[in-house]
Image (cartoon, rainbow, N blue to C red; front, side, top):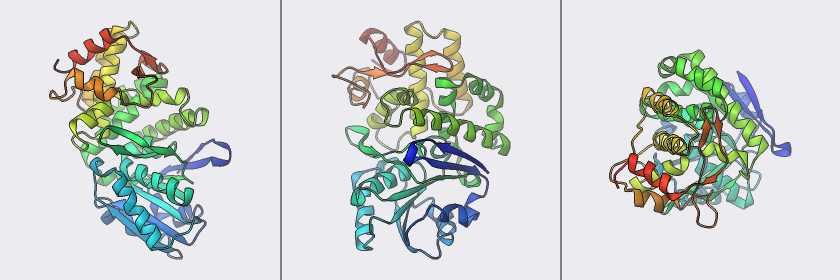
Length: 360
């Protein structure tokens, strides 16, 4: 087991990474400080792992909420389902909520924990690669709205993150590739050596080689933890973690939640960001080709849906937390391994990128 720390003063917490961690009852129990515990999971994960987690909590008053699986259910209605259960069970503000699932469950569960009685403890047990390397770390919680992704939420840190790499054995190939999109992101924004490693070891990672997988998860989490520790509430460097996300969120919203997995949309969006970076003179064509190639090798899409016009893209990109005074601000690449802080971009090169990657 590897243990990393997110250094946030009194809100600091550990990230545990290892194979078979759900078998170690004491690992979870040491972060539970109340008899009242609620596990929030979904209809895919619960049949596989809910009982395993429940077995670690035999002495606790346990309740469960099982939500439908999918991005389309990351809503205020789902959050209300959790509130209903907490209130029906008369859970107090000393209760603990455990989010057992992928990024959707982690975001909804964390948001519910942040809101219930103005904040109860919660624990992240991520069960997808994307959640283990990205969404479970850093305290971003929230839900989607029909007009914009992740526009309703809160910064709320967990007590701990338990990333059991063994659960990835049941993850389907599409979800696994979606997680690799976020792994690649870390190499692009701040860790050039890691990007080179990924280029040389991607096939081992796709084959779920245990050593390669453990290394990629640890390196990704270490990058994320360092950024979050430096900028918890995204007033500066943390924004670089959103490389490709403004384009990607537009794809998810415009195509309809659930049509593209988050990592798939981020892969497309990162290719668009790379193209725009080239048009601004930061990347050359060879850099862009390398970026597109590694996403393709990871079995990820690199072209947005053709039913999403450039104009619709712009409308959707205008609904983004990085924007100020109505100006679209993007994270771009100065080089492979170095991202910009949010920058406003002239309309002409942005239009050219959108036309290059979709219909007019």
